[in-house]
Amino acid sequence: MSFLSILLALLIFGVLIFIHELGHFLVARAFGVKILEFAIGMGPKIISFVSKKSGTRYSLRAIPIGGFVSMFGESGMEAVQGTQKVDAPSQSGEPIFLNDSKSEEREEETPVKEAIDPDLAKQAYCNKSVWIRILISLAGPVMNLLLGFALMMVLVISAGHHSAATTKIAGFYVTYSAQDSYEGLQKGDYLYALKSGADDTDDADDIRILSLDQLKAAVAESADGKVTFSILRMNEKGTDLVEPYPVVTLTLTDELLREKFETSLSSSTPEKDGLQVGDVVLKVNRTRVHTYDQLSYEIMTQGYQPLTFTVRRNGEKVVLSNVIVPNYESGGILFGDVDFIVYREANFHFGTIIKHTFYRSVSSVKMVFDSLKGLFTRRYGLESVSGPIGITKTISDVAQSGQKLNLLYLVIIISINLGIMNLLPLPALDGGHLLLYVVEAVRGKPIKQEVEGIINFVGLVLILLLAVIIAIKDIVSL
Image 1 (cartoon, helix red, strand yellow):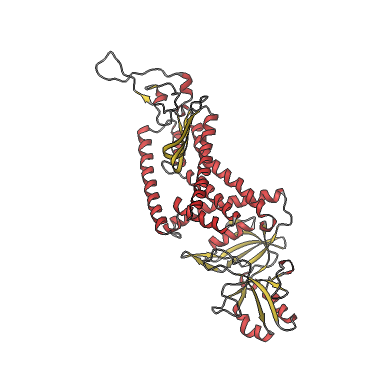
Image 2 (cartoon, one colour):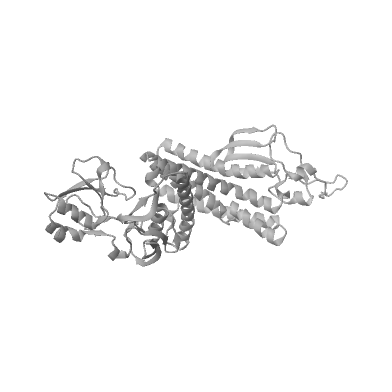
């Protein structure tokens, strides 16, 4: 990892954390809660100043992971009960402590109930209704989700019409499946498009290969038996396509194609799995799909086993059972692979942008829950989990590749992950607070402060322990 890529990762983390804490801050302020400090990062303060108007301290701290919004009355319910004296807000922005008031007339130190400044009491977080506290806790994760959705719209617009694809099947990939390479072809190559010749560099005149019969027809029409086509080939790591697409020229007779070469080619045909050109895929197993991004994701995550497709064919719904798609392995995990081509959207306008933004965002949210499910069902191991170090490495790799849209998509996924993970009902996370507040709403009274403190402390220790384990794993795998 380069120094610049590490700075880029820190900038991305900083922005996402800022947006998260800003959500808590804005909603708390909207409901009249006094904010003691708004901090990005943890540990010692690097830069800090206090607003003269609100008394809120704004600070940037040394450890560039995390952040917090410190609210008056957040740490306890004593202010509600009136058993503590609350010092007046400090103009220096230092935290306001809840101090015991001692009676000077008695030798023993006995707490005395004293009235609280009504205006100050109204600003205490713990004096707000449980529903307001729920909204304040929700605000941070929701801001991360909204940021992810907004950036997804930027991605859809930037990618343009080319990436706005439907679920309507236009044709099927022809795949070279033999173990041995043949005249430049390698196992796993997709025969992509017919070209006019080996020197043809203009993609505009290419003819997409949609079936094996189309390739046979091209051989039959060729005067000298030479057929040139571009192919889709994955790089050595299996993470991306080789660009520009390799071009292969074969000299084939009908007999050679039929007897030697055809057996090494396979395509997804109606006889193979029931799918047909013109089918509009509506569901993959039980999951509804509306765009190609959703369709390809569901095939990838579920296609390691036979699938059930629900399609619309000639105006009628047809259920296709036991559909088998190609598989590939990555990191010891088996995934399904798409072996057909789909039509793009007829028009690329505002409605199309909103449609693809929404469904790609929904699919990204589903990805987080699918990943969690995969961890619990042991489909994915701990090696699939990354912390800040592993994510920084990924950001570095994507940034160095120069693929800006891929970097943008990675930021979107991180933002959505941050939002969803903070909503999980785990102690010390926003979701843990939400769970306690829901319990309070059902019971009609708050959980004892001592009990809540123990729950959050244990949860924090467990989360920190998991973070250390993941950090060690990320360091070892660098």
